[in-house]
Length: 318
Ligand SMILES: NC(=O)c1ccc[n+]([C@@H]2O[C@H](COP(=O)([O-])OP(=O)(O)OC[C@H]3O[C@@H](n4cnc5c(N)ncnc54)[C@H](OP(=O)(O)O)[C@@H]3O)[C@@H](O)[C@H]2O)c1
Image (cartoon, rainbow, N blue to C red):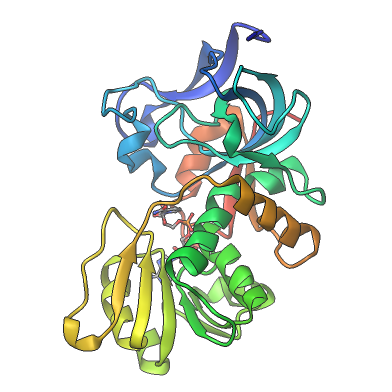
């Protein structure tokens, strides 16, 4: 049976669709549990660039408004309660997870999560570090392997390599045995090299399409002009996987390359594989800044600032 710890919690909410100006730090009801859910006490929550613009931030799966809405979709926390039908977790487990984009998020003291999406937190990380990973690392994993089919020995170009997704994608691709080329700005060249990139291009001073070619796979987290210029660096049969925006414009058929857009999905098994790679030292999180939950507005402003590295994390509890 569901036993709520308390009735109200501190949370970040938006009462109307918009941007940072809509964010308020206030009391909200502790969420109830549906069948299969677990209640997680959030220790830390990752936040993601552009998430306040995503459609599902404001609606449920049927398209109905769910204002006021709580942002944040990656967490590290402790299971406080489980509903009937919740599998694979028990009260007291330390977990990390990517939560549904169509439900209230993790920028709160408590969140109700489908238990099947919770995975044991990497043993070697603290809560803040673990909260940088679920969305970013699952996106990198699914882009490179499920959609991009990356194989050892192939050449991959990763745009935005100092960012949340890019910083993990560089490390996963290197671990997989690929030749990794990355774009970033001047301040992050050393960081991206230290993550394992073989070649780093400063996108502000050099046009990547002038210096590289014959790439098997491009991971594009930028879109726009960067995407348009990326088709020409692919070899015939190559693939561009995009996570930017909401769709992808296909390239001219004469190039013999293909483009895929996808939206990341929660996946417990993949999170467990990622935790193993972390604990064996193949991947490290990049924490750009840690901001208290009460200052979430500042955190959401920072994600748009140039020069940011890795992920910004809301510290919810010690
Ligand atoms: N489809 C999905 O499932 C999915 C999943 C996760 C994220 N996303 C989206 O993917 C995007 C990236 O997410 P993220 O968390 O990695 O964001 P992020 O942390 O903001 O990283 C983006 C990085 O790209 C850099 N950058 C900006 N313009 C660039 C350019 N022209 N060339 C190369 N690098 C450039 C930025 O650095 P500077 O501006 O400092 O140079 C920043 O380091 C966001 O829009 C996010 O909403 C989608």
